[in-house]
Amino acid sequence: MMKIYCCQLDIAWENKVENFKRIRALLNKRRLSPGSLLLLPEMFATGFSMNARAIAEQENGPTDGFLRELARDKGVFVLGGLARSASRGRILNEAVCFAPSGRRVAHYAKLHLFSPGGESRHYAPGAAVTLFHWGKLKVAVSICYDLRFPEIFRMAVQRGANLLVVIANWPGRRHLHWTALLRARAIENQAYAIGVNRCGKDPQHNYDGGSLVVDPWGKAVAEAGRGETLLPARLDLTAMKRVRLDFPVLRDIRTRLVLKTAGSKRREHTRI
Image (cartoon, rainbow, N blue to C red; front, side, top):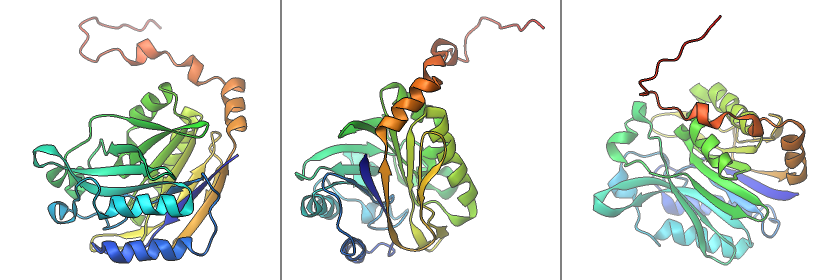
């Protein structure tokens, strides 16, 4: 069994110091299991702001420093989201993970930018799926809108992922999609899917929280309500391996058929 904690936060708008305080206050109410994985929402220090250049940080900025210190203090792995300044003037919506030693073990830039909300006008997209090892689990990281694109999760699982993490600022008006898609990603990939959402409101949206941990059969292992909370869950790696052996969906994928390019000149006919 491995332990995770989802930190569902009511994010103070563009106020990093206040959000660091709120997280500390939530964590001070509970002793975290050493070596566990603590998950924070997308852009947890600022909210999902399009004021990208004002909130973006260089590497080893204040949010990196907070996450690194938190990982060391609590003796856990910590993963959270922030706006990152990158080369050539680009700004990335990024997730970063630090180990208990304070070493950065992974970073991921959001692949799919939320065009209906204008994100693609202010941020640059990432270019690669990111995985990292946490104990005996291999973790794939994604951010919010990425959840709607199943192909990147399949790609991650074919590279060995068995834990799919989604950090988000997912609005309440589309909460049904949040739960349905997390269950779908877990079931189709026979993996644990964890969605860590914010709660409260910002200048654009209300957020229903609902952070969710789903097992490989699509069953909710743990689910948060609408308020701030630290949601714990245990992940059973043995049970997940058994699911994959007893019901070999992943083995039965016809990979070459799936990867055929749409531009192929050969015409396909179906005989009835």
